[in-house]
Image (cartoon, rainbow, N blue to C red):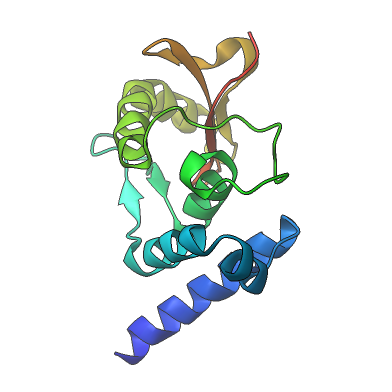
Length: 158
């Protein structure tokens, strides 16, 4: 029970820092966007690290930090006015985001594994003209050297 409480306290601390970097706080979120605060709180408590590949020796996963970055900046359900308005929002429902990420990251896994074999200490990314095309949209992907997803979002430019 203590470990679970510590993990949740750590997540709230990380979330508070991320909200502060956006010019928000838990208090502002609760006061101005109570439905978004409830959704975010439930995600903080329910989040489980997710691995996107089962093949290959190089891990590809979403950590809690990855989750915060992606969800707070790119998921419509958690969008707040004037916060990262220039960032693309997924046209998918939140529930479909993980499925889309699984498909895109799964399709990139062979390329990722080969790249990590040759460049074990480097980031892997597909951005700009090399963004991954799936289902009518292009997705930018940035994977940190340890395999943690740094960012994943739908491109809005052509």
